[in-house]
Image 1 (cartoon, rainbow, N blue to C red):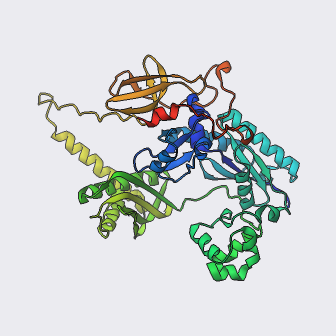
Image 2 (image 1 turned 45 degrees about the vertical axis):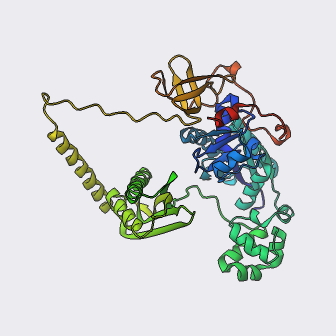
Length: 485
């Protein structure tokens, strides 16, 4: 534990939803839900306006629609979120060389390593300046927690939400923690909380009063001892600049249960290829292949196979995934499939040879196919039919006449587009045929600095608690317009 609150935790406020509100002026101050938009989709992020109605992350989208039918339900745009995240992380790295990213919108910073004086006034000034810089750079807001330990800094930032800053002075940890529910502590999930509840332990204070011996008896030595230390406010984990990934995986949820065994196998092969792409993009290889199968009744099974050595060979990973799939009964219907690789390592010489062999085989196959084609005087090949366009809600588009906009909804051969930019006023809505040649997918526009200075909105995408709209206020019809399509 540090004698000064020099560990900073930043958590962007409702990040995905706030980015969408900043990009779409017509949605500012309105309920917005980002995530899977299909019947089996899951909420990734809900704006604070949507949370008033009970919408939460990881909730099925169908349930969210029942709770808040007038919200704007948008597909995620990760290219935009990554751009904003990179800008925020650059600001954090300017404060200290020790930055520990936890996700796109969350990170720890060791201010002491950045030369910030170990005084409360100094670290508070740094935190306030960071919030201003994030606002001016991205148009979004973030909440900052400052404490002498990582656990406490994270709790402080959660307490500060939205758009606030909380400093936990060393020596006051117990005063803050004691009345909080035990679920506040890291590592306390539903199962652990239920075990503690049956023992009459509901708050952090009651956890500390139970004593280490009792917690070890209830939860086991490692978990019990660790939980007791955290209940006392003790956390000596350092800020680590590089967090090494333990596994790489991909998964898909299907709108309709898959019952055809051939289709299930094909989807598993496709997921294995996607997993290999992510593995190679990270410059890694893996030793253990894991598959995940969620059945029609929500029961979830996992199977794994450990290989002789780490690999990133797509043929090896595909074959292992299919072998594992053969051990699972999928006749009742499959709701979700996933493929992952764990036991990660850097590339080995054997992996490189396997990759080169695979690429050589692919080139040889392409050459054979080219040799089999008829000469110039032969029958011309029929042009391949392009797949139909899919206009997901929230997608960036550009129209030859009207410029940049985003998809509000589509159906029955039509697509509705609102034409506006992050620095414009709320835009007009127009409807086109889905195959309109003048309409094409676009790229995310910058959230700030892209338009005339006098057109730039000065309002943040997330309002502070003190000026947030009243839950009973009319939120307009924009979300209803989207969700009805």
